[in-house]
Image (cartoon, rainbow, N blue to C red):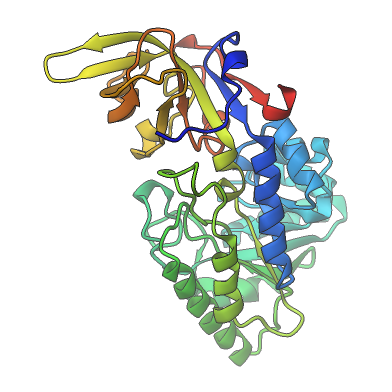
Length: 386
Protein backbone atom coordinates (compact mmCIF):
# COMPACT_ATOMS: atom_id res chain seq x y z
CA UNK A 1 0.00 0.00 0.00
CA UNK A 2 1.53 3.37 -1.00
CA UNK A 3 2.35 5.78 1.80
CA UNK A 4 3.34 9.39 2.12
CA UNK A 5 6.94 10.37 2.70
CA UNK A 6 7.12 10.72 6.50
CA UNK A 7 10.10 10.91 8.91
CA UNK A 8 8.68 7.96 10.84
CA UNK A 9 11.62 7.43 13.22
CA UNK A 10 11.36 11.05 14.38
CA UNK A 11 7.59 10.77 14.72
CA UNK A 12 8.00 7.91 17.22
CA UNK A 13 9.42 10.29 19.83
CA UNK A 14 6.60 12.86 19.52
CA UNK A 15 3.42 12.99 21.54
CA UNK A 16 0.37 12.22 19.44
CA UNK A 17 -1.94 13.28 17.94
CA UNK A 18 -0.34 16.06 15.92
CA UNK A 19 -0.57 17.67 12.48
CA UNK A 20 2.32 17.28 10.08
CA UNK A 21 2.62 19.62 7.10
CA UNK A 22 4.67 18.88 4.00
CA UNK A 23 5.87 22.40 3.21
CA UNK A 24 7.58 21.24 0.01
CA UNK A 25 4.23 20.05 -1.34
CA UNK A 26 2.53 23.23 -0.11
CA UNK A 27 5.01 25.41 -1.99
CA UNK A 28 4.64 23.27 -5.11
CA UNK A 29 0.85 23.59 -4.94
CA UNK A 30 1.04 27.36 -4.51
CA UNK A 31 3.47 27.63 -7.41
CA UNK A 32 1.22 25.61 -9.73
CA UNK A 33 -1.86 27.61 -8.72
CA UNK A 34 -0.12 30.93 -9.26
CA UNK A 35 1.35 29.81 -12.58
CA UNK A 36 -2.01 28.68 -13.97
CA UNK A 37 -3.83 31.79 -12.71
CA UNK A 38 -1.19 34.12 -14.11
CA UNK A 39 -1.78 32.77 -17.62
CA UNK A 40 -4.99 34.77 -17.63
CA UNK A 41 -4.13 37.55 -15.20
CA UNK A 42 -6.36 36.11 -12.46
CA UNK A 43 -5.90 36.95 -8.75
CA UNK A 44 -5.85 34.34 -5.96
CA UNK A 45 -6.93 35.00 -2.36
CA UNK A 46 -6.41 32.16 0.12
CA UNK A 47 -9.51 31.31 2.18
CA UNK A 48 -7.96 31.37 5.64
CA UNK A 49 -10.86 29.46 7.21
CA UNK A 50 -9.31 26.29 5.72
CA UNK A 51 -6.25 26.58 7.94
CA UNK A 52 -4.96 29.56 9.92
CA UNK A 53 -1.67 28.03 11.09
CA UNK A 54 0.69 31.02 11.14
CA UNK A 55 3.63 29.13 9.65
CA UNK A 56 1.47 28.06 6.71
CA UNK A 57 0.10 31.60 6.34
CA UNK A 58 3.63 32.95 6.11
CA UNK A 59 4.46 30.54 3.27
CA UNK A 60 1.23 31.47 1.47
CA UNK A 61 1.99 35.18 1.87
CA UNK A 62 5.49 34.67 0.48
CA UNK A 63 3.92 33.07 -2.61
CA UNK A 64 2.27 36.41 -3.40
CA UNK A 65 -1.28 35.27 -2.73
CA UNK A 66 -3.96 37.49 -1.17
CA UNK A 67 -6.40 36.58 1.60
CA UNK A 68 -10.10 35.82 2.00
CA UNK A 69 -11.40 36.24 5.56
CA UNK A 70 -14.75 35.54 7.19
CA UNK A 71 -14.18 36.90 10.70
CA UNK A 72 -12.42 39.65 12.60
CA UNK A 73 -10.05 37.09 14.07
CA UNK A 74 -9.02 35.98 10.61
CA UNK A 75 -8.53 39.60 9.54
CA UNK A 76 -6.23 40.19 12.51
CA UNK A 77 -4.29 36.96 11.88
CA UNK A 78 -3.71 37.85 8.24
CA UNK A 79 -2.59 41.39 9.02
CA UNK A 80 -0.27 40.17 11.80
CA UNK A 81 1.41 37.75 9.40
CA UNK A 82 1.89 40.57 6.92
CA UNK A 83 -0.69 40.18 4.17
CA UNK A 84 -1.20 43.47 2.37
CA UNK A 85 -4.60 44.87 3.52
CA UNK A 86 -5.49 45.96 -0.01
CA UNK A 87 -5.37 42.29 -1.06
CA UNK A 88 -7.72 41.12 1.69
CA UNK A 89 -11.37 40.28 0.97
CA UNK A 90 -13.83 40.14 3.88
CA UNK A 91 -16.81 37.82 3.38
CA UNK A 92 -19.44 36.37 5.71
CA UNK A 93 -23.19 36.57 6.12
CA UNK A 94 -23.04 37.85 9.71
CA UNK A 95 -20.30 40.46 10.08
CA UNK A 96 -20.45 42.24 13.45
CA UNK A 97 -19.94 45.97 13.85
CA UNK A 98 -16.62 45.33 15.59
CA UNK A 99 -15.42 43.17 12.70
CA UNK A 100 -16.48 45.76 10.13
CA UNK A 101 -14.62 48.44 12.09
CA UNK A 102 -11.45 46.30 12.13
CA UNK A 103 -11.68 46.01 8.36
CA UNK A 104 -12.30 49.74 7.92
CA UNK A 105 -9.43 50.67 10.24
CA UNK A 106 -7.06 48.51 8.18
CA UNK A 107 -8.31 49.72 4.79
CA UNK A 108 -8.94 46.22 3.43
CA UNK A 109 -9.41 45.73 -0.29
CA UNK A 110 -13.08 44.77 -0.36
CA UNK A 111 -16.11 43.70 1.66
CA UNK A 112 -18.14 40.88 0.08
CA UNK A 113 -21.63 42.01 1.13
CA UNK A 114 -24.51 39.57 1.57
CA UNK A 115 -27.59 41.71 2.33
CA UNK A 116 -29.04 45.19 1.85
CA UNK A 117 -29.04 45.75 5.61
CA UNK A 118 -25.31 45.00 5.69
CA UNK A 119 -24.82 47.76 3.11
CA UNK A 120 -26.55 50.19 5.45
CA UNK A 121 -24.38 49.19 8.41
CA UNK A 122 -21.09 49.37 6.52
CA UNK A 123 -22.05 52.78 5.14
CA UNK A 124 -22.95 54.17 8.57
CA UNK A 125 -19.75 52.87 10.17
CA UNK A 126 -17.68 54.21 7.26
CA UNK A 127 -19.32 57.63 7.69
CA UNK A 128 -18.31 57.66 11.36
CA UNK A 129 -14.69 57.06 10.35
CA UNK A 130 -14.71 59.38 7.36
CA UNK A 131 -13.87 56.52 5.02
CA UNK A 132 -15.21 54.96 1.84
CA UNK A 133 -15.51 51.17 1.80
CA UNK A 134 -15.07 49.12 -1.37
CA UNK A 135 -17.78 46.46 -1.62
CA UNK A 136 -18.70 43.55 -3.87
CA UNK A 137 -22.25 42.25 -3.76
CA UNK A 138 -22.44 38.52 -3.18
CA UNK A 139 -25.02 37.06 -5.54
CA UNK A 140 -26.81 33.80 -4.85
CA UNK A 141 -27.09 32.40 -8.39
CA UNK A 142 -29.16 29.30 -7.54
CA UNK A 143 -26.49 27.02 -9.01
CA UNK A 144 -26.35 23.52 -7.51
CA UNK A 145 -22.72 22.61 -6.76
CA UNK A 146 -23.53 18.85 -6.61
CA UNK A 147 -21.59 18.52 -3.39
CA UNK A 148 -22.41 17.65 0.23
CA UNK A 149 -25.53 19.43 1.54
CA UNK A 150 -23.57 20.96 4.42
CA UNK A 151 -21.06 22.70 2.13
CA UNK A 152 -23.28 23.94 -0.69
CA UNK A 153 -23.81 27.70 -0.58
CA UNK A 154 -25.29 28.86 -3.89
CA UNK A 155 -28.95 27.77 -3.97
CA UNK A 156 -32.01 29.65 -2.77
CA UNK A 157 -32.29 27.32 0.24
CA UNK A 158 -28.90 28.53 1.50
CA UNK A 159 -28.38 31.51 3.82
CA UNK A 160 -25.67 33.11 1.71
CA UNK A 161 -25.78 36.03 -0.67
CA UNK A 162 -28.52 38.07 -2.32
CA UNK A 163 -30.89 36.16 -4.59
CA UNK A 164 -29.91 36.99 -8.13
CA UNK A 165 -33.39 38.34 -9.01
CA UNK A 166 -33.03 40.90 -6.21
CA UNK A 167 -29.53 41.99 -7.19
CA UNK A 168 -30.52 44.89 -9.51
CA UNK A 169 -32.51 46.48 -6.70
CA UNK A 170 -29.58 46.01 -4.30
CA UNK A 171 -27.31 47.77 -6.79
CA UNK A 172 -29.71 50.71 -6.94
CA UNK A 173 -29.58 50.86 -3.14
CA UNK A 174 -25.77 50.98 -3.22
CA UNK A 175 -25.97 54.14 -5.32
CA UNK A 176 -27.80 55.90 -2.47
CA UNK A 177 -24.92 55.51 -0.05
CA UNK A 178 -22.02 57.98 -0.24
CA UNK A 179 -19.47 56.03 1.80
CA UNK A 180 -19.50 52.72 -0.03
CA UNK A 181 -18.25 52.04 -3.54
CA UNK A 182 -19.43 49.09 -5.61
CA UNK A 183 -16.35 47.51 -7.19
CA UNK A 184 -17.35 43.89 -7.78
CA UNK A 185 -19.76 40.98 -7.87
CA UNK A 186 -19.01 37.95 -5.72
CA UNK A 187 -20.09 34.33 -6.16
CA UNK A 188 -19.34 31.20 -4.15
CA UNK A 189 -21.51 28.15 -4.74
CA UNK A 190 -19.93 25.50 -2.54
CA UNK A 191 -16.85 23.48 -1.59
CA UNK A 192 -15.23 20.25 -2.79
CA UNK A 193 -16.82 20.56 -6.23
CA UNK A 194 -15.76 17.57 -8.33
CA UNK A 195 -18.00 18.19 -11.36
CA UNK A 196 -16.16 20.81 -13.41
CA UNK A 197 -19.30 21.50 -15.47
CA UNK A 198 -20.69 23.19 -12.36
CA UNK A 199 -18.25 26.03 -12.91
CA UNK A 200 -19.41 26.27 -16.53
CA UNK A 201 -22.96 26.73 -15.21
CA UNK A 202 -21.70 29.49 -12.94
CA UNK A 203 -20.06 31.23 -15.90
CA UNK A 204 -23.33 31.17 -17.84
CA UNK A 205 -25.14 32.68 -14.86
CA UNK A 206 -22.56 35.45 -14.44
CA UNK A 207 -22.61 36.23 -18.16
CA UNK A 208 -26.39 36.55 -18.20
CA UNK A 209 -26.37 38.70 -15.08
CA UNK A 210 -23.79 41.09 -16.50
CA UNK A 211 -25.76 41.34 -19.76
CA UNK A 212 -28.90 42.22 -17.83
CA UNK A 213 -27.15 44.82 -15.69
CA UNK A 214 -25.60 46.48 -18.72
CA UNK A 215 -28.95 46.49 -20.53
CA UNK A 216 -30.51 48.30 -17.58
CA UNK A 217 -27.80 50.97 -17.66
CA UNK A 218 -25.71 49.82 -14.70
CA UNK A 219 -21.97 50.44 -14.96
CA UNK A 220 -19.58 47.51 -15.28
CA UNK A 221 -17.93 46.52 -11.99
CA UNK A 222 -14.15 46.34 -11.67
CA UNK A 223 -13.95 42.69 -10.73
CA UNK A 224 -15.78 39.37 -10.70
CA UNK A 225 -15.04 37.11 -7.73
CA UNK A 226 -15.86 33.45 -8.37
CA UNK A 227 -15.16 32.28 -4.79
CA UNK A 228 -13.57 28.88 -4.31
CA UNK A 229 -14.79 25.30 -4.49
CA UNK A 230 -12.12 23.40 -6.44
CA UNK A 231 -11.96 19.83 -5.12
CA UNK A 232 -8.98 17.73 -4.10
CA UNK A 233 -8.58 13.97 -4.43
CA UNK A 234 -9.03 12.51 -0.95
CA UNK A 235 -8.75 8.91 -2.17
CA UNK A 236 -5.34 9.23 -3.86
CA UNK A 237 -3.22 11.85 -2.08
CA UNK A 238 0.00 10.08 -3.05
CA UNK A 239 -0.75 9.94 -6.78
CA UNK A 240 -2.73 13.20 -7.14
CA UNK A 241 -1.24 15.58 -4.57
CA UNK A 242 -1.86 18.82 -6.54
CA UNK A 243 -5.39 19.77 -7.66
CA UNK A 244 -6.17 20.36 -11.32
CA UNK A 245 -5.72 24.13 -11.38
CA UNK A 246 -5.03 24.03 -15.12
CA UNK A 247 -8.53 22.80 -15.99
CA UNK A 248 -10.15 24.98 -13.33
CA UNK A 249 -8.77 28.27 -14.64
CA UNK A 250 -9.13 27.21 -18.28
CA UNK A 251 -12.88 26.75 -17.75
CA UNK A 252 -13.29 30.35 -16.63
CA UNK A 253 -11.07 31.67 -19.40
CA UNK A 254 -13.17 29.79 -21.97
CA UNK A 255 -16.68 30.37 -20.62
CA UNK A 256 -16.64 33.57 -18.56
CA UNK A 257 -17.05 36.76 -20.57
CA UNK A 258 -15.16 39.36 -18.61
CA UNK A 259 -15.76 42.94 -19.69
CA UNK A 260 -12.94 45.19 -20.85
CA UNK A 261 -10.71 46.08 -17.90
CA UNK A 262 -12.47 43.64 -15.58
CA UNK A 263 -10.40 41.41 -13.29
CA UNK A 264 -11.20 37.93 -12.01
CA UNK A 265 -10.57 36.99 -8.37
CA UNK A 266 -10.90 33.56 -6.76
CA UNK A 267 -10.74 32.31 -3.17
CA UNK A 268 -9.52 28.69 -2.89
CA UNK A 269 -8.80 27.30 0.55
CA UNK A 270 -8.90 23.51 0.62
CA UNK A 271 -7.29 23.23 -2.84
CA UNK A 272 -4.16 25.06 -1.65
CA UNK A 273 -3.50 23.37 1.70
CA UNK A 274 -5.44 20.12 2.17
CA UNK A 275 -3.02 17.64 0.62
CA UNK A 276 -0.02 19.05 2.48
CA UNK A 277 -1.47 18.19 5.90
CA UNK A 278 -1.67 14.84 7.70
CA UNK A 279 -3.03 13.99 11.15
CA UNK A 280 -0.64 11.58 12.87
CA UNK A 281 -2.18 9.46 15.63
CA UNK A 282 -1.14 6.40 17.65
CA UNK A 283 -3.00 3.14 18.15
CA UNK A 284 -4.10 2.68 21.76
CA UNK A 285 -5.90 -0.64 21.46
CA UNK A 286 -6.95 -3.19 18.88
CA UNK A 287 -10.38 -4.37 19.96
CA UNK A 288 -11.91 -7.47 18.40
CA UNK A 289 -15.65 -7.83 18.07
CA UNK A 290 -17.84 -10.62 16.72
CA UNK A 291 -17.87 -9.46 13.10
CA UNK A 292 -15.23 -6.73 13.02
CA UNK A 293 -12.22 -5.28 14.79
CA UNK A 294 -11.49 -1.73 15.88
CA UNK A 295 -8.24 0.19 15.82
CA UNK A 296 -8.75 2.65 18.68
CA UNK A 297 -6.45 5.66 18.19
CA UNK A 298 -5.63 8.64 20.40
CA UNK A 299 -7.00 11.23 17.95
CA UNK A 300 -10.69 12.03 18.05
CA UNK A 301 -13.17 14.21 16.24
CA UNK A 302 -11.99 17.05 18.44
CA UNK A 303 -8.82 16.92 16.32
CA UNK A 304 -10.41 16.21 12.91
CA UNK A 305 -14.18 16.62 12.75
CA UNK A 306 -14.76 16.22 8.99
CA UNK A 307 -15.65 12.49 9.05
CA UNK A 308 -18.12 13.01 11.90
CA UNK A 309 -19.66 16.22 10.52
CA UNK A 310 -19.66 15.57 6.77
CA UNK A 311 -19.26 11.77 6.52
CA UNK A 312 -16.02 12.79 4.83
CA UNK A 313 -13.52 10.27 3.49
CA UNK A 314 -9.81 10.48 4.37
CA UNK A 315 -7.26 7.92 3.29
CA UNK A 316 -5.86 6.15 6.37
CA UNK A 317 -2.45 4.44 6.45
CA UNK A 318 -0.51 2.51 9.06
CA UNK A 319 2.92 4.03 8.49
CA UNK A 320 4.92 1.84 10.92
CA UNK A 321 3.71 -1.67 10.01
CA UNK A 322 4.75 -3.71 6.96
CA UNK A 323 2.67 -6.75 7.93
CA UNK A 324 -0.09 -8.34 5.86
CA UNK A 325 -3.14 -6.06 5.62
CA UNK A 326 -6.28 -6.63 7.65
CA UNK A 327 -9.59 -4.75 7.95
CA UNK A 328 -10.41 -2.33 10.79
CA UNK A 329 -12.81 0.36 11.85
CA UNK A 330 -10.53 3.25 12.84
CA UNK A 331 -12.12 5.02 15.79
CA UNK A 332 -11.26 7.67 18.37
CA UNK A 333 -11.55 7.80 22.17
CA UNK A 334 -14.36 10.36 22.44
CA UNK A 335 -17.59 9.19 24.05
CA UNK A 336 -19.70 9.73 20.92
CA UNK A 337 -20.70 7.07 18.41
CA UNK A 338 -19.78 9.44 15.56
CA UNK A 339 -16.11 9.49 16.63
CA UNK A 340 -15.11 7.31 13.68
CA UNK A 341 -12.45 8.14 11.09
CA UNK A 342 -13.18 5.24 8.76
CA UNK A 343 -15.05 1.95 8.65
CA UNK A 344 -13.79 -1.29 7.14
CA UNK A 345 -10.44 0.15 6.15
CA UNK A 346 -7.64 -2.09 4.96
CA UNK A 347 -4.49 -1.35 6.97
CA UNK A 348 -1.24 -3.21 7.38
CA UNK A 349 -1.74 -5.52 10.37
CA UNK A 350 -2.12 -3.10 13.26
CA UNK A 351 -1.06 -3.30 16.90
CA UNK A 352 -0.82 -1.05 19.93
CA UNK A 353 1.73 1.74 19.42
CA UNK A 354 1.58 1.83 15.63
CA UNK A 355 1.44 5.26 14.00
CA UNK A 356 -1.56 5.97 11.80
CA UNK A 357 -1.60 8.72 9.15
CA UNK A 358 -4.95 10.31 8.30
CA UNK A 359 -4.21 11.97 4.99
CA UNK A 360 -5.41 15.13 3.20
CA UNK A 361 -6.13 16.81 6.54
CA UNK A 362 -4.54 20.19 5.87
CA UNK A 363 -7.91 21.89 5.36
CA UNK A 364 -10.65 22.09 8.00
CA UNK A 365 -8.65 19.89 10.35
CA UNK A 366 -6.56 22.03 12.67
CA UNK A 367 -8.80 25.06 12.02
CA UNK A 368 -11.91 23.21 13.26
CA UNK A 369 -10.25 21.46 16.20
CA UNK A 370 -11.88 21.87 19.61
CA UNK A 371 -11.28 21.00 23.23
CA UNK A 372 -14.35 18.81 23.59
CA UNK A 373 -13.97 16.42 26.54
CA UNK A 374 -11.30 18.93 27.69
CA UNK A 375 -8.86 17.36 25.29
CA UNK A 376 -5.81 19.53 24.41
CA UNK A 377 -5.59 21.01 20.94
CA UNK A 378 -3.23 19.09 18.64
CA UNK A 379 0.24 20.48 18.04
CA UNK A 380 1.61 21.00 14.55
CA UNK A 381 4.99 20.45 12.90
CA UNK A 382 6.40 21.51 9.53
CA UNK A 383 8.42 19.08 7.41
CA UNK A 384 11.27 21.60 7.25
CA UNK A 385 11.63 21.35 11.04
CA UNK A 386 12.91 17.77 10.78
